Image (cartoon, rainbow, N blue to C red; front, side):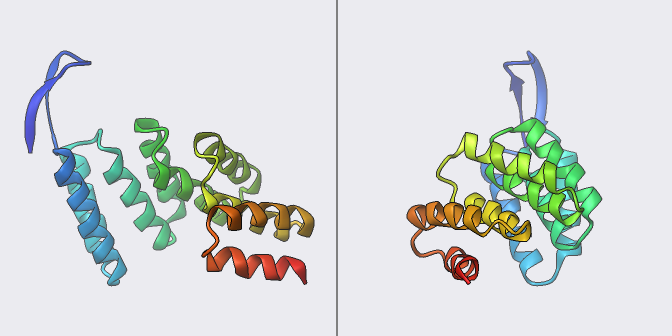
Amino acid sequence: IAVGVDRERGSARSGLQAPIAVRIVLVTERRAGLGRAGEAIEILRHAIALDPDEPKSWTQLGIVLFTRQDLGSAEEVLRRALALAPEETNARHHLPLTLLARGNQAEAQEELARILVIDPEHAPTYIDLAVLALSNGDAAGAIDRLTVALRLDPDSDRARFYHALALE
């Protein structure tokens, strides 16, 4: 844990040093991947208690909650991560997935569009938008988005799968 002066606030603050926060995220990704999401959540909640202003911890917690289908909590936590770091790619990408899972397609589509404003070459977002287009019966729109995704990431199996599906 680092203790220092927050130059923007002009006060002392304690928190996790960035490399430690990254290691915590990696450890919790591994735990969650091994089916130990409960442990990952506990570790992340402790990390957040130590440094509530660290967006990577909030993001990872939101992702783990999403994988456990605790969608309301995941949405809340991912929004907190984005409030701390609006361009946090993982939070920005998982929030619309969470919204979709909760049945909020319109807001999910808005969030996906925001990703492309921040990163117009984010291939997974084009794929997600294509899947939305397919679910709404818009095969032509899906093909357009998947063509872009494949230009950006020609090795994407997911883009190729949905492209073939849209062509049927």
